[in-house]
Image (cartoon, rainbow, N blue to C red; front, side, top):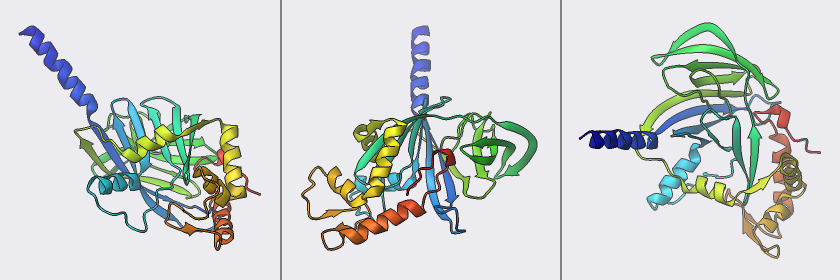
Length: 275
């Protein structure tokens, strides 16, 4: 009887660890820091056991569509460069950057030194406490709650005595706000995230920067070579654009302009200068 009771405790523990806690954030940011125009997206922060995964909601939608044999909407683009993975409580991050059909895998070490404030507020029945930090070339104001047992947050923000539910920089370039939380009984698998991990090419920071600059020099050639057949006269971008000999120069110039204009990363210290 005692043996069965111990087995039951172990079994419950295993199933409890398999549960995924999902936090969905509204993310509003400026792709171009010189303009007031902002982009709004939703991101998931999934915590399963000791694994923490942060990614755009588009990957969740795409996986659900494929699972149910539903065609992709034309406006859906799976070319975001923000897929981040780490172990709970760790400052070692795996970051996956998608350059169309090339996936770069970068290992980084990121942590913040927080200054706790006594300021508190009530938002959606959650008691939030204020904290500040300077990180990545920006000054950040965060609000966290101890009502969730996780010292995690969106992107690479972590290390406060509770879940970060709101965080923004003092120049209003980035703002993250918790919109919803839910528990999922089974581990949330996603084929797109798994492919990004499996097909990624490990790179150092110097090689990562070199690849980004090479991509900027000629996005069309970079993508064409990445298909494995540089003799292809026609290929597709992730947004559905058909590239061929008649429009390759136009597409190339457009992509270069986008790369150079939308160069306002969360971590300003890691911004790449494009000539």
